Image (cartoon, rainbow, N blue to C red):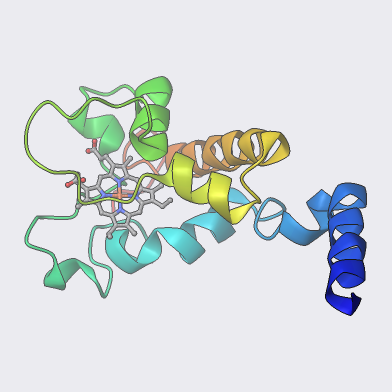
Length: 143
Ligand code: HEC
């Protein structure tokens, strides 16, 4: 009986404040999200040299060169889809990077609110990546 009551109480709490339980990372800035979820592979500064990178059988891309590699444009929508990963059809080979759209959705509670939060988190990451592009701003010092 106690368990049932406790179950109801917990379920009730879940209904009242789902966001409070979940919202782990939704308040993080783009840079904080990056350091928490991406830096291990892509490196603290996005250069593709994170501690996990050398243990992968593929090269981890330098994320500061997206602009340069795409012919001096930053394809925000494409980058967004790559990070989300759920709509990207893998033409060939395997995807080594986690499907972040799914990871963030689960992390935030796997409901409708979580879906919106996952979208916002990915947008913040895209904006952060845009801010670290090499040579995007002509005034940038050459690293
Ligand atoms: C487990 C290591 C790993 C983690 C963690 C990781 N990535 Fe990746 N990422 C890769 C690899 C490897 C690739 C190359 C494509 C592939 O093999 O999946 C890649 C590709 C990318 C690309 C495409 C680069 C290009 O040139 O098109 C972007 C953008 C990207 N990652 C962003 C992120 C972001 C943002 C995060 C954190 C939310 C992240 N990655 C976390 C390993 C990782």
